[in-house]
Length: 214
Image (cartoon, rainbow, N blue to C red; front, top):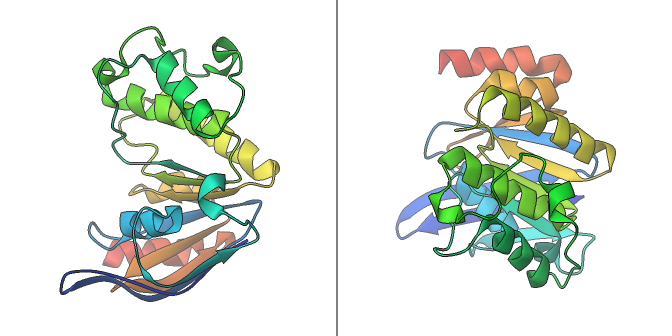
């Protein structure tokens, strides 16, 4: 369980998040929706520990950041690094043994080729594979379905559902509500710097109606 209390974040005089409160339980898939610029990515970076903030984020983990795998909207790949080397780097960063990468290559990526030459969708698949290999407890996924083909979308959904079965915390943003409603246990709407509406499966329709009217 991750508890976010009174989280605020500003860039200069521009306040992006203000006194936001949210609970992220284990064994759940939690969706985050909101307009562009609402603060979804900023919230994710605060949880991940890559942005400073006011307020508190607590969990049962001594060092939460070492338990989080974060997939950014547009993963950045170092030049002259192959897909295979990228995955090995992620294992080394956590002092983990390198598994058989052929077995872990669920998207059939060309791991011997330079990752910087991958398409947008392939980079996203590689970055996701890397955080899955790390066996994280918390997964923060910023627009994971963007730029990914239909077959891979289905594989992603299956993977996220499996993570839930394993008791992981999965936090996902997407601008496609139907995609979230298929797999999420709850969905939260960020607006005006805070959570303005929350819904579980029984009230997803109400939240969708609010989004359609906004």
